[in-house]
Image (cartoon, rainbow, N blue to C red; front, side, top):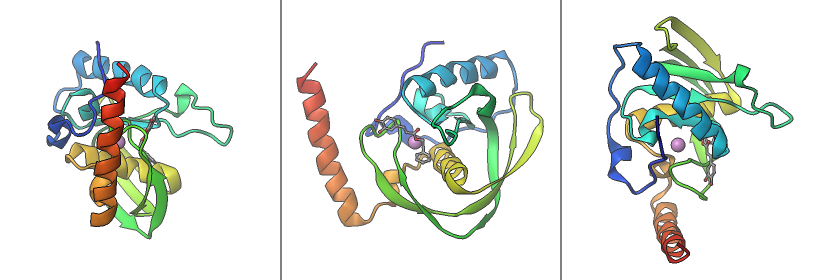
Length: 174
Ligand code: QAP
Ligand code: CO
């Protein structure tokens, strides 16, 4: 499968991802193709909609202390639902679909998430810290929400200006 990252302001990022009903080879091929895209772009999380597949699938690989991301730590989540949320955490987020922009975002510190794995087995995961932040960020993608939507009005305006300027520079250097 030949995938590429959809970048803001592409409207496709605003689609609502569909619940997955078939845990078939197509789903496995999609998940298998998402992994090298995420790793090759220095990502820690990627939702299927970011590679133009609006289905409720996401992958995560949170780095260890030493920065390594062994494949054993890969988490694949299908049809995730947050069932508990508590506390507050502020983390500087980025997004593969909003390249080169990072900003502090407030999220829930502790969450419980129910989801299915690629073989439709039901899973429950309690998360805190960076894993919790990453899960919330990726589940937002399934609902067409980007982290930049959470900025204050003035910060968002500043972002739009900077981002447009950056995109012009990108075009000019092609
Ligand atoms: C979402 O984000 C996330 O701008 C995953 O030039 C972010 O993997 C979860 C990336 C923060 C938790 C905390 C961004 C790579 C990667 C860029 C990413 C870039 C290259 C973002
Ligand atoms: Co993102």
